[in-house]
Amino acid sequence: MRKLMLAAAMLLPLSAMAEVKVVDAWIPEAPPNAQAMAAFMVMENDEDKEVKVLSAFAPGFNTIELHKSVEVDGMHKMIKQDAFVIPSMGSLTLKPGSYHIMLIGVQDPRPKAGDVIPVRLDFADGKQMTVQVPVKKRADMMQRMENMQKMQGH
Ligand SMILES: [Cu+2]
Image (cartoon, rainbow, N blue to C red; front, side, top):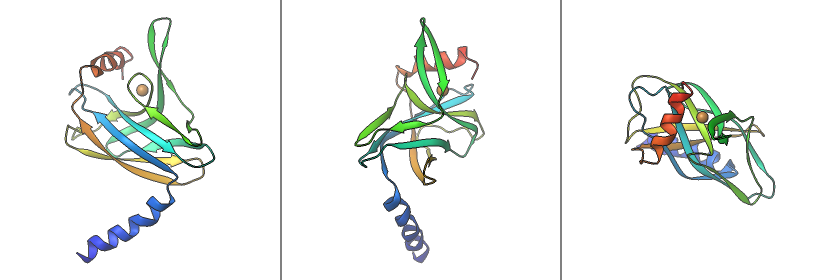
């Protein structure tokens, strides 16, 4: 019990510090042969200045990148981003077919629906925030993205 209270007390300053609120975070469950997974979420910023996410980290993956999916001449591509910019008094939506956190090199045991992955966001001002992201069964709409990842070999 004492341990639990201590842990909660240690978490408090972090959440009070965070300038960004994250909602609707999820990671689609990947098929057994997939080499990569993606994290989606909505990042809300109610500060009067823009906030930048420069990098992210999640245990159980070899490499984490910030990506944006785009369509160029009918071809799906994923472009590595230097940062995610959350506009002041606005939000940035990470969703299939758009911005996402790319989790590359899935390690064993492979995450499955029901698991929760702590995804750490590293902000430009040096602050960090860890979001508990649930793994969920992917809807049919995700099939398209999965095929796209296979074509790109990751
Ligand atoms: Cu990607």
